Image (cartoon, helix red, strand yellow):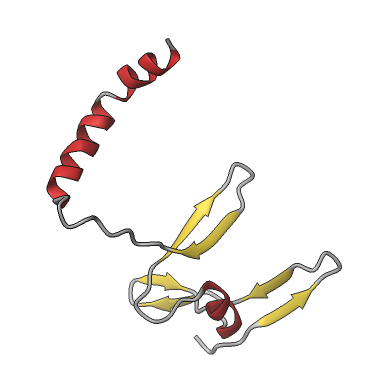
Length: 97
């Protein structure tokens, strides 16, 4: 990728960044303009997430990594999550009563 970026400001004070998609091994990739990376407060090695809303728009934001308290083991939290997913219908029924 050659780092070329087109930045446009329109009347609604929206900044639009335009980048070309490039090949990265067997995947496709897009580099972030420095100004956008600074706004997102991201650097090499950070994770970003893409969130698609109900209108089909994609929101880009830095992935916030939560830290568990020392007394909570990750495998216990994962087991709780699995049970919650299995019993989601029951929990929703209880909520609606």
